[in-house]
Length: 88
Image (tube, rainbow, N blue to C red; front, side, top):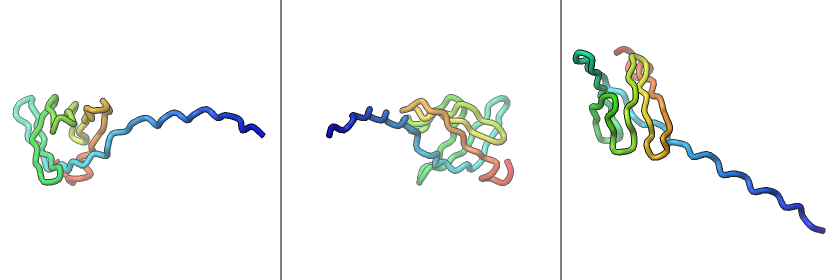
């Protein structure tokens, strides 16, 4: 008895790793906002358009979120910051 050939399943779409940044605070100077982030044992101070370890780029900073692009896959991710800090 012959088995019907099944079509191979498409590979799942790649996904970015979960964001591991911890929001520490921000500073606003004029129209420029920079955020303080911790990742493992490293601290980062970044603004819009800046890269972190050539893996992430900061796209947008608001009072509630920081939006990143995970550069290797060009996937956008959002970090909720008001839940972590309690207040800004």
